[in-house]
Image: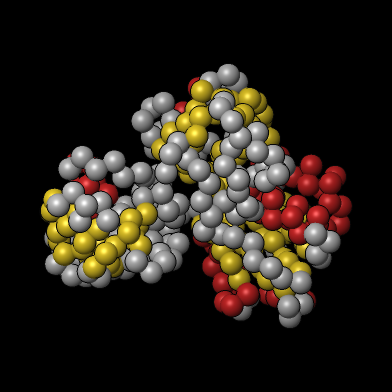
Length: 304
């Protein structure tokens, strides 16, 4: 996907350790998007990081994302917090959406901390369409919750802010009991919140997005060959090597962001062979994510 050229228009502190970036189109309108979408930011320190879009989908001149400074940062959030200033040029990917807002008669949105970002445009879209929607937004304190005050001012009693340092964690069981039978639930937050939502709500009505992949166990890695159909090359993938790293080492410019199977930037088309899907997105038929997924067959034939 071709990169889009933007300029950092604004950098705003929106909570403790959280900044909002407003990116302005540098050349023509930006690619359209829908609630739940995210973009990859290509950072000047050679890293690529994915962030949910949290602005207005109708505004094709600007994108907005919010970034929490992770104390265990691998160089992404730390660089953004320390070095990003208005006026800096920045390449971003076209939007991708693995967390779309499906039509429903009513919604319950559950956000934990920075997990509010993909839910902001969802709530706005529901309210604009006059669809009943409630947001339960959880954080350690309101000072750590980006956009909290603006949400309360804009949406009133549609929004419930829960500061766990004062109120404790909300009981999702009670929310599930009072949930209308035709409502969909959208949840984005840390792993304990996702687990609690999965225990409380029916799977067919719950849609989630994670910060980090769920802990799972797979069979030991084995080597395999990636057969690149268009170029006619075969790239061996060692047991201690990811498909993404093997392809990059061989000179294939495969995009990459999270390297954890949650952003989808390294999606590849599989022509034949059986991939072992290890991502948290749910790869569609004929696709795989090269950063974490491997092969169940000696060869994978890829559209490369």
